[in-house]
Length: 91
Image 1: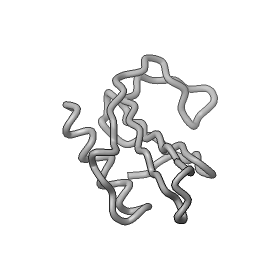
Image 2: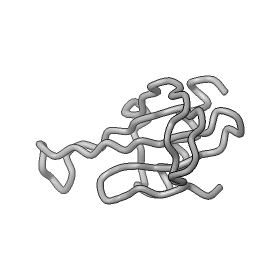
Image 3: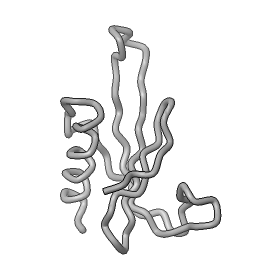
Image 4: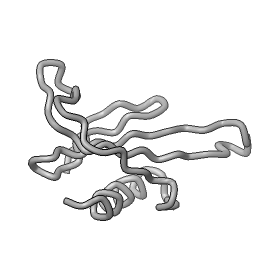
């Protein structure tokens, strides 16, 4: 899975949660080996992406950063982590 495919997959998922998404705010950080998952007894290699949501509720000084992880082997979305959210993504 290449970087552009990863970003498109993350954008599609985030649009379900946050409505309109500016794809230019999604960044790909690379692969983290043996990364933690939502299961405390499990680790796996994950692609990590980050989405920056700025100017929340009209406040220009507020920024939320969401991390979306994708399993390297299965290419499935693994979890989303952000303000007030940490959950496994079921595809």
